[in-house]
Image 1 (tube, rainbow over the protein chains, first blue to last red):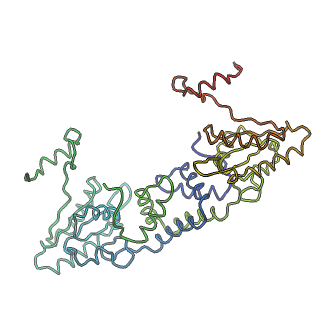
Image 2: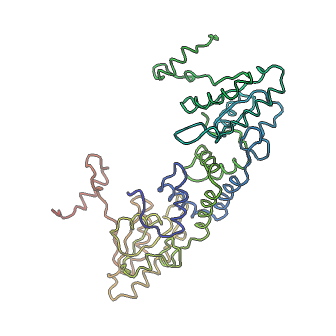
Image 3: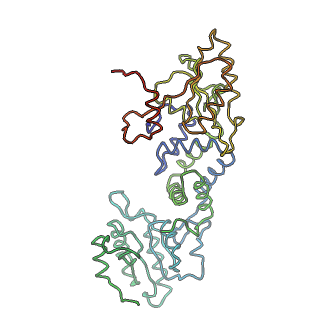
Length: 213
Length: 213
């Protein structure tokens, strides 16, 4: 069977397939399947879907402190007084915050960069929220006696872009004298040595930890 | 990584993920990925997508003759005077019309049943456009001298539901004395005998065709 249809029976259908097919990971075949599915649904169901997308796009706000998606001016994490306000975990995206929150292991705050420095993709430091981060750290340092009481965790991907971005930020905040850490790298839990790549395995040996029986 | 997030940073995001995730073939993970993608797009792009979906759902019409999706009261196929108006190909869905049109091998008209008789799915003959088909055939027969000049092609799936539906329609229109045919079944072009299922291979032998060198 062919992957695309040359003729559409309706301009409305063709436009909808074009629009749905513009989404990442949805080819024209799936887009047509989705469009025909929507046609079989009650009108109110379809409007519910499109309205929730429009509301998301138009209504969503970004936390003025950490730039996380939020329903208000300050996100639920920043406004949670039980969290450790002197630890800031720097992540690339909203999705990363959700992943870390889901572990239930972190109780500090976040800073969403909104991207990563990538010369190939044409993303430079000015496209990210680095300046806002520097301001935040500066303000946090002024609240404590010892700058080492403030910790910045670099939770960026372990690729070249991630390392470049972490290094750029490190240089920007090094002057404050705050503690800077990065995510532990090593074998995943349950990983077989046999299948680990040599870079990961090598780092796991170099950064070996005290055995906790 | 977990498959679902327990906490969403925003109700708007959660609602959009729920709505997008209600579409067939899109899980919650993909729905979240799509929602976050939409957030990164310019507002007008997102509105273009939702508007084309709304326009499709609200604006699409069904051809009064064949029940095909159409922008007007009569579809582009039914209103094409160069087509053979005395051959009607009966299909389950809009999608089937598009598939057959795409072959470029058929020049008659269609009749979209809008489903298939399936006791399991609770779809009976009254849920389909069978009555309208019978009326169409009746009217076509009145236009010709010999009812055999009218042909009805059963282009339904080769499963139990398809065969049941074809048989039901056959009994409804048998009285008109029109020609009734069904799609040729056999090995696909390029198929290996070795991998053909025995039912298909058996039918291919029984319905063997004159060799055309």
